[in-house]
Every structure is written in C-alpha cells, then in structure tokens.
Image 1 (cartoon, one colour):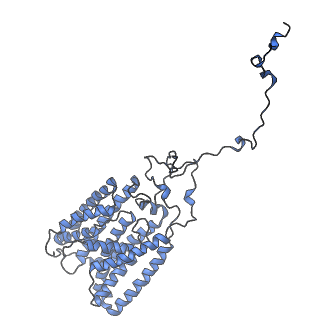
Image 2 (image 1 turned 90 degrees about the vertical axis):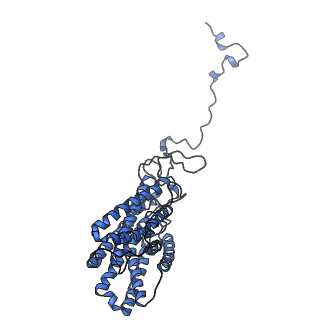
Length: 403
C-alpha cells in the first residue's frame, strides 16, 4: 500500500515491542501494510461480467429502437459515453489516490453553465478560463487535504458547497451559446477517452505504480501522515479530477438538446462515484481494473438510452444510488479476493545492511569461529605461589633462605 523506498534509516526498538520510527519516516505504520503482489484475476472476471451485461443491454436497445444506434443518434450516444466517462475518470482518479473528490458533480454543472453562457467566444475562449480555475481550485483543496491531513471527502465536500453557491446565482436554465457541436468529432473523442481509460488502467496494474498512486491510503491510524510522496500524489489526483470534471461538464452542455438547468450537481457526484466503483475501483483507494471504466460507462449510458426508448424515466439520484450500492459490493469483492496471497512474503526479506524497511533492525550474526565453546572450561586450582606471606601464620619463605 505504500511505496517501498530503499536506504531508509531505522531507529531502535523500544522495550514495548512496538517498532520505533523517527520523524524521517514518511510511513511510520509500515508494519501494518500488506506485502506481496495484488491479484488481478478478480478484476478480469468482473470485467467479463460487465462486458456480457453491455452486450445484452445493447441488443435490447437494438431490438427496441434500432435508430438509436445509427447516424446522428449513435454519434450523440458516443459523445454521451465520453462525457459520462470523463466524469467517471474524475471520480476514479481521486478514488485511486485514496482522496475521493465529491465536488466533481458540482464542478461539472458549473462548467456546463459557464460554457453555455460563454460558448459564443469559441471552445478555446470558453474552456481555457474554466480549466484554469478548476486547476487552481483543485490545488487549493488538495493543499488543505495534505497540509491538515484531513479526509479528501470532507475537504472536497466543503469545496462543493462553494461551487454550489456559484451555481445558485442562476435561477433559470441557460441556453447554450455558440455553434460548437461535439457530435462532428464523436469518434475521435470516443477513441481518446477509451485510450485514456485503458492506458490508465494498464499503468495502474503495474505493481510499483499501483502502490505509488495509492500511497495516501491509510494502513493503520488514518490520522497519521503518509509522507511527502503520498501528499504530492493526492494533490495531483484532486487537481486532475477537477480538470476532468470540467471537461465533462463542457461536453454535457455542448451535447445536450436543450438549455442547461442549474442544480447542486451532487446527483452527478453520486452517479460518477457509483460508476467508478462499479468499474472495479476500490473506495479505499489503490485497487482498480483495466477495462472496467470503459465497460461500466458504456453499460450505464446504453441502459439509460434503452430505458428512454421504453419510455421509462429514472431520477439521476435513483440511478446513482443503485449503481453506487452495486459498486460497494464490488469493492468488498475486490478487496477480499484482490489482496496479496497470505503466502507471498517476498517483500519481507531484509536488505543487505540487516535492517527492515519498517523501522526494525536485526543484529548482525557473529562469525562461527568466535562462538563460545559448548561446555564451560573447568576451573584450574591456583598455583602454590599465590600462597604468599599475607595468608601464612609463620615467617615467610624468604626469611629462611641463605643470603
């Protein structure tokens, strides 16, 4: 769960038996960490289940409304997959770094409103200021998280409240200005999202990267600091998730058929976190799959399209709550079946200097030739010269000698 760094100094072990760690230890609870390689097979099996479900729902949509999978409707569906996918990536990135960003939904709604008002300035003119503000806001919240070492969900919930204040300044839906239509480049957008999701999952499956990204995940006392490296990763995750949520909001506004309605956006947060956990990303951080995000997003969007074709109307709160409930079950599954095997102790071997990375130290073995004999040596009777005049009652021997 933490990233092992070589050459870490150790301190003495107190008499209580608890390993002592000095202030130079960024991970002073390393003894509680899991050692070994995470098992990926559970992610593969779950992603196969998601793939089968996606195929089934797509066939149901095809039977109900084949036109939804043709022409302009299909391009609009592809853009919707990208928009939902970016929002899910925003939640998933923050989940992987163990500092979940609950402000992704309000940020997406605020970005959609901003783009609707400023879209006549062009995509670059409207998007660049929004992305800059999002990056600075994510950085500010990230610094609060790592400096005060508070849970990410609490700090980002406070940030979400500030974003909602910005949203509530509008009391009526806002018509989208400008002529930007993402449906013209739907397949390029879909290919870019798919590449980002899959490549991110592949890099996250590498053992060292997986542990580095999830280093902020607590392993013992959650109030203990996890070091400078973990802090940098957590801040980067919050900045990246806020920027991705902004891009998602812009696409949602540009792809929508009507005006953008102001709202809290927390329903989008529930849906995004739910899809991310359904994809196989653990709510505890660190663990996640490879193709799960792409498959879970596609399954959700196609299901909503199928429900719309049947005339069913679902609240986003209801869909998000159901998806999140299923995602929590998936988290329990991958945390139980994805942790390292109990017999894998490859990381427990001490370094060459005789010290363990968790602050324990082992004494160096003495050479064999210096070991004491098995049986103690018998005491030798003191020689006669030790019986000096001090212990005799008569005259000493030197008085009897002839001078």
